[in-house]
Image 1 (cartoon, one colour):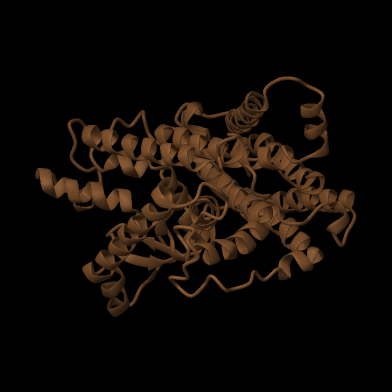
Image 2 (image 1 turned 120 degrees about the vertical axis):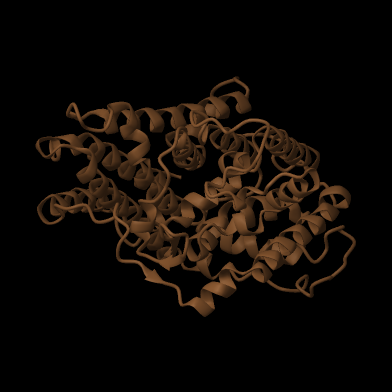
Length: 449
């Protein structure tokens, strides 16, 4: 990250096993998993509304009730209001908690929170809350009162637009975080969030709150990861508990979904590669502007991820009555979400734990005046993870391998509903090769960074 170490420990010297053995073992685990699936998993299990456990009515009434919703929305607004203090009046240096809240708590912290509670950010999203209050002020029906959640706007949200706005927003944020030389300049970060708020407002004016569901980068990010949680809803809209992979299969295969997962996966890979010795030597040997180099490299990696996944998904035969070939990538894109989560855990675990603690300390002094509003300013950071690099490195390898194995399972289960039986094996090989490549590169970058 820009001027903030986003990496935990976990280079080749930290691992309890040789690098080549970890990489070979990871890719072998993926290949073996696929072979087992072909033999033992011959019927799709996740695309049918079954094996759901209804949340007991007393608990469901609380979780779906207006009291909890209002409390969470109020909490989001209160936190936004509080963060305006350091954003406007705080010091322009890394003692300002704005940077830790944005890069550690918001961006990385969304992963574990969404894994536990589902689409957590939607529940507290202050931008959504403010826009829904505007809905009421102008006499519009809030989006969550429509059966399709579309919201009222000047025009309906076009299906072809899908998640494309979110992919652009996500790219803009990871560029701010990982490439921009002004990522830790308070004025520039304020400008970024002001433009983000303006984009949400303009989109809401045209399309209603459907725009937030498809364009807010943080809400879309949280919602995708939240599909790996056990919390879901059945066809009647009731709260249910399901297996995470069954919930994952319920991600809506809309336009732009491949672009979203490519940005999330590619930007994390870029962050690893930008810390490698090879890249550092290349930068030092060239006079090209570092921001241009970084922007070009991150775009290149994202495009490579998107193209390889799209090509691998479409490299199969489809029957005359089958799914159109052009729709296969978006219908299989949900399988990349576990891989993204694995990468995020592997890459940012130490950063979240340790810089997250530092942010908790700094947030008691939002104005940089020596205050201790919440009694956390005197806390000390626990560096247990950094002091146990073998534990950290093992978690990282396990996270990457587990994410890819879950991705293979999700892709195989969906393929059983998309591909003709005569194409079931050959049709999945290209996607398997792509995922093996992602596994190899993920572990390679983990060791090389």
